[in-house]
Length: 285
Image 1 (cartoon, helix red, strand yellow):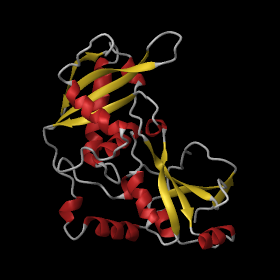
Image 2 (cartoon, helix red, strand yellow; image 1 turned 60 degrees about the vertical axis):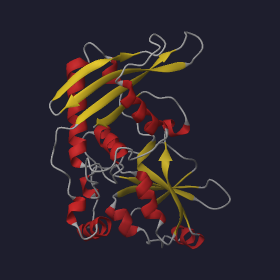
Image 3 (cartoon, rainbow, N blue to C red; image 1 turned 120 degrees about the horizontal axis):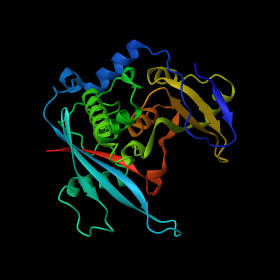
């Protein structure tokens, strides 16, 4: 059981321990409920020759003293095992965007709207198994979740993005050092959600008798729960996970529990309207 720790104010996302007990039977139940009777719904497709585009979006000062920035882009396209650099666009220096920017604009619109799963569909099957997270490459895992909208990063997409980004950086970072500094930044936190509980559940938390979410917490590997007294309506709780998820879906799973009044993901800078440097991966059909 994970203990509830009281905090005076909200704090940044916590790092989790590397392991946590999960219940295999609960994983099987979750997969059956999510996938249905057709096991093909949970089977990832065979690798194909999909071309992926990658825009590294950097930020450049408009002027020395004004504090304003604007985006510039380095763009690459990758087939499995091969990546090529297609060019750089600085909107202040080149008024008309290059032909390749149409794909970037589509990815940028999805990212700016904090929309998850803009490229979901038949390209890769969703992954629903909490035992598959966390993975070694945080950037590729978060980018895969954002692009696919899957609860957990699809293995094939994760591998592809991790390999492509490693190839781009190893091949081109000497000439373009910005590639090593620009990383994918998700607009939502992928390892924490916020909850409000029903009043009777709040009381049982205070009494140390609240166990309604123990099964979900074990399944999704909750490693820390913090309590925040944010209003007169009662406390809010930050649930921190030893794994990375589509926290829009994860919040809904918790919200469906009878003792949960409200649940939503934690928000990061992009979702609050701040301009950020990031990597924008996008499938090209």
